[in-house]
Length: 110
Image 1 (cartoon, one colour):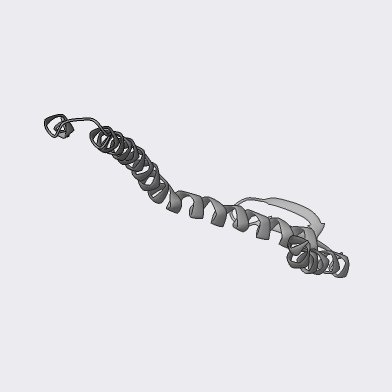
Image 2: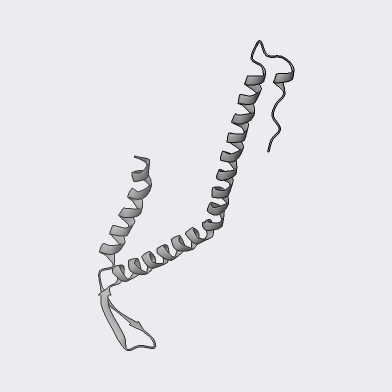
């Protein structure tokens, strides 16, 4: 529901813009002798869409180093959690009743 509260006005503005700017324009590229006839609203929305995608790609590329670091840290966390579980099981085994003091010594870490 919250998504539509944010997206709804934006879609409404786009529809009103498209309906208000329906006059045809000729788009030309300077060094070439090409021309494309379209409505002004479509031309503006296509350019906006292209730059939106360009910005999304740049943001995605900028996040790649952070994602790689997070992946490495996740592996380190898993290793440390396994080591902690081993230490806890060794500590529980050492504190079981009926064992002598000599058998309570923890094994050295390899």
